[in-house]
Amino acid sequence: MQYDILVSIFAPFYFIMLTKVAMSNLLWYNMGACFPLFLHSFLLVVFSCWNCVSHEFTITKMLQQPQLKRGKFHLQVPPNILGENKDDKDE
Image (cartoon, rainbow, N blue to C red; front, side, top):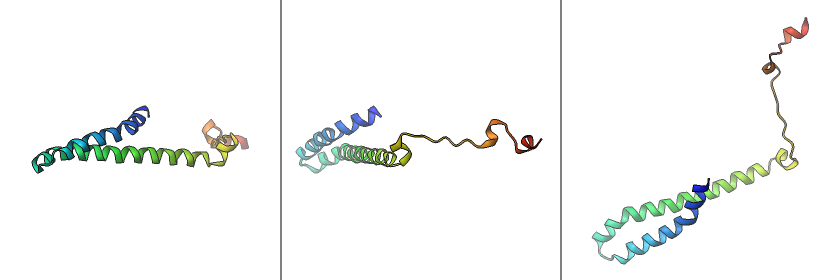
């Protein structure tokens, strides 16, 4: 999780730096050499933003659940998990 936060913070700066490098080289062969780095930084920004948005959506969705708002957790245990059978109770 801490790695995701660091990527989200530093990815835009990385993207801007590589964009400046790519745009400063106006010749097409230099631009072609910088394109993989440009694409990598662009995808890094897109996926880090998507990660932040989806993470915030997950937290918001969890907080909207009524059992989390009340602070009560209901644990439902099946009756046979404790080794109790209906046949044993009849005897």
